[in-house]
Amino acid sequence: MPRMIYDYTKSVLERVSFDPVLFTKELKKAIKNLLPYEVEQLKKWLQFFTNEHPELKQCLSVVS
Image (cartoon, rainbow, N blue to C red; front, top):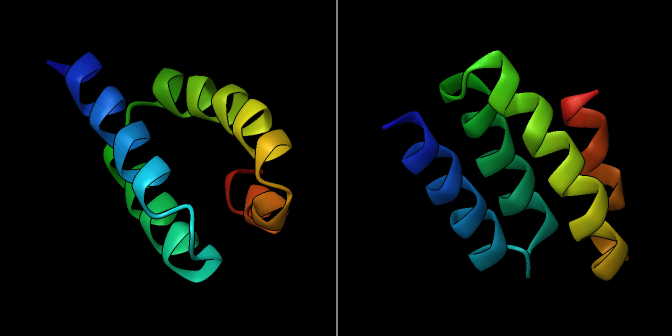
């Protein structure tokens, strides 16, 4: 079940990536709902994802 939540979180973040404010809001919600090791996985995924979407680089400070 937790894996489904992680995958769902990534899909939500991908869908709202057009708006950095909304992306940050969803990212904060995700951090509250994910397990610690999932947050670490999400950080790695965000590094990759923000390389393709540089306008979202500022959102990385939320997970630091």
